[in-house]
Image 1 (cartoon, rainbow, N blue to C red):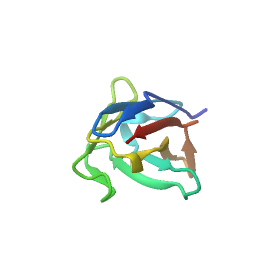
Image 2 (image 1 turned 90 degrees about the vertical axis):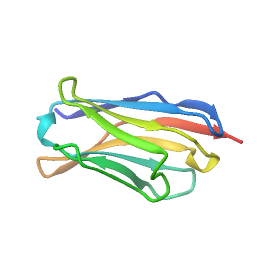
Image 3 (image 1 turned 180 degrees about the vertical axis):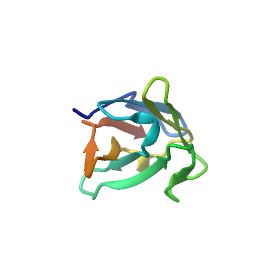
Image 4 (image 1 turned 90 degrees about the horizontal axis):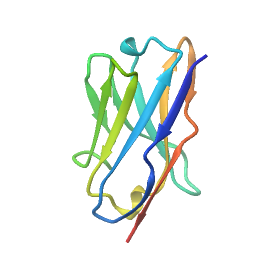
Length: 115
């Protein structure tokens, strides 16, 4: 059974930093691409970043240069380091993995950036 559990969200002032974590289980972690998405109130869920099994990364233009995705395959963990946070980064952040013909999501963690 695939399970993704996010943590690390919270309230931070603009310009601050947070580090999100996602613990994955039930998958062959070292072979999969992991991603982060976010959903702000009243908006569609949007892609934020992804990291391949080989460590290649891609970012949405809105977070490029501020966010860094990383993974620890020994621990089945993926991280999202978020720096220089802006109020528009306020959203619920979700961990994602496409696996075995399905798409799996965590429960989400709230990030709120105050101005």
